[in-house]
Amino acid sequence: MEIDPEQQYRRAMGAFTTGVTVVTAADAKGAWSGMTVNSLASVSLAPRLLLWCLGSRSARYAPFAEADVWGVTVLGADGEATARRFARAATQDLRSEEAETLAGVKVLRGGLAQLACRTHDRKQAGDHLIIIGEVLDVRVRDGAALTFFRSGYGEIAGPAD
Picture 1 (tube, rainbow, N blue to C red):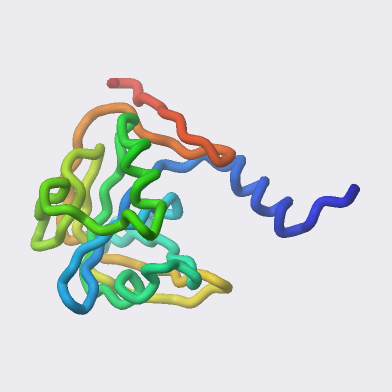
Picture 2 (cartoon, rainbow, N blue to C red):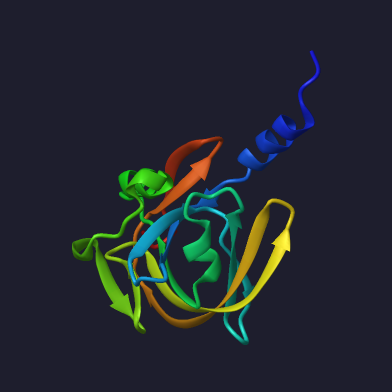
């Protein structure tokens, strides 16, 4: 039995372990929401740039694609429930008690790192929009990280943890 090339590609990418983040952005009315993202990558140190990818079929495509500023929270090992919540469109609204502000941008409370970003560029690539952000401010905390591997969550601790 031959495996569909798209399924084979998904399996190959699933073998690449990633961290787990929640990206936060406001819509045109100022209502903030979050979306679980594991496509985050550093682009440049000078200037500080990072990127993430937004699926064109996302239920919340417009607010994230159009946002001028947005936040990223890197989830700690205790963040699986948060990752699952923000992975579903029906539960992506950001409640005030779960957010704090960094450089004027809402990010989730806690996590291993929080970054406030301003959109630097956008590039369409296949069925995703690559959003490149300039990092405006950063907070970092110690702890074990939440990971995603072969469609499941796990954790990894650093040498100092």
